[in-house]
Amino acid sequence: MTNSSFPKRAVHLDFHTMPGVYDVGRDFDPELFAKTLHEARIDYITVFAKCNLGFAYYPTKVGIIHPGLQQELLGPMVAACHKYGIQVVAYFNTGLDHEHALRHRDWCRLNANGQVYEVHTMGHFFRKMCLNTGWGPHLLAMIEEVLDGYPVDGIFLDCFTVTPCYGVECLDGMKELGLNVADPQQAEAFCWIVTERFTEKVKQLVQRKRPGIKVYFNGLPYRMQPTHVELEVLPTGGWGYDYLPWAIRYARTLGKPYFTMTGRFHMSWGDFGGLRPYQALLYDCYNSIANGGTCSVGDHMHPRGRLEPEVYRLIGQVYARTKELDPWTEGARSLAEIAVVAPTIKRHPQSGFERASVAGASRMLMELKQQFDVCDDEADLSAYAVLILPDDVVLDERLKGKLEAHLARGGALISSASAGLDAGRSAFALPGHPATYEGPEPYDPSFFVAEPEVARDIPQMPITIYTPGVALRAREGAAILARLYKPYFNKGIWDWRHENMYMPPEADSGRP
Image 1 (cartoon, rainbow, N blue to C red):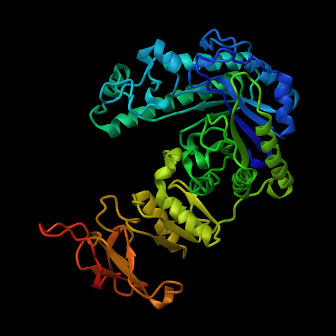
Image 2 (cartoon, rainbow, N blue to C red):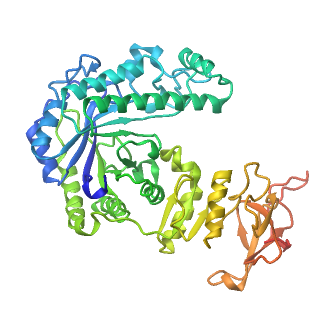
Image 3 (tube, rainbow, N blue to C red):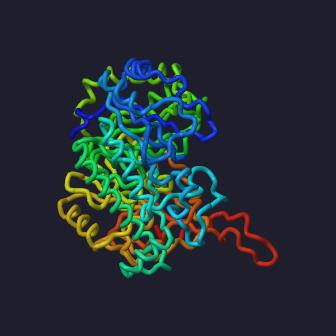
């Protein structure tokens, strides 16, 4: 499937509703609901079968119906939207289900301290479900119930969190596989095994019941997604504006259709009264279609079941503009000569918040107006003229071999900080590297002075390096473009008389 045949203008409609809300669905009119979406040029919507509180919004015989539900929502939504040619995906929360957690404490994930409730964290995730308990089969039964009862075009399973569980089922499972429960990495590995078993069961169930529909496991690696990729990225909701530029350039290398899921909220999900300006929402959608993706906007419907007209007026304005660009964006693909290579991004794409090195490299390349992709270590790197290893990329034998082949083809390689070290982090892995590694930089702060070849717009004075990097020694024949200056003392050293607070540069360190 290519993006040309993929939904172009979607909405992800949250409906997490507290149990005390007594008039759920009171004002719901399926015809008005679908017409509002159609007039906003929406062709795909994710709606709620089961929310993260654990309530169902259809007459389930398996789960728990919301106690305040006045009328069924799921079935009429599907029927009305299909009338307007709008695809409908059913939402289930997988990692959270607070009502079932209250009724089945044995279905909850147990942390290493033996706790179910991590009250200090609060928020949504203070207790989580374990798929290795009765929760897994129960959720599969709910999914099967919806697939049997409604002609949905897909299922969306939310809040996969791969964190270890130490309940008896997981302890027994780890023991059977010979895993060391006391080793956090092995406990996490078992959690991955449990997760992958469950996702396989979901895919098999879909194949039996409704083959060909879309399936998405939110929170799991993009490479694990069976049909497409949804990049959840609310820039003002915790992801920031640096996340999407690199994440979408990674998604587009995987050969799957993808869209960006931004939000209409000023803050994050559940911000009922937050509505971003037109220009801000349009920027997110532009960013997606300029990188070969399509668009989705997150909303949260009021419990009474009426879509907020102002929200869909805004979404409609944005989607009217993106629709005008369809002739230029349909079937578009990237033509990049540069790849930022970061192996760890394939494991947890949504935990990319901390991947400052990838975001930093991406920002610099965008400011330089260069076309680039972001790749993991499974990617085919042969199409790129330049590879960049940002900051902390350690080379195993597989990636080392790919880089050696790239250099043998005449390709260029740029690495920063400790990127390029061997698995033991003792030396640069590639033969012929122009520098030798001497360990962490001992000077703090240090300073650099640029050589004339790269000194344009850089003041000709020692410039502070605020965070220590790595200490290098140039090999014979290496070109040095900046020299390192050392301070008189390292900052913060206490000699029982003074703390070193003022550290000017002392002299050239003799190192680059």
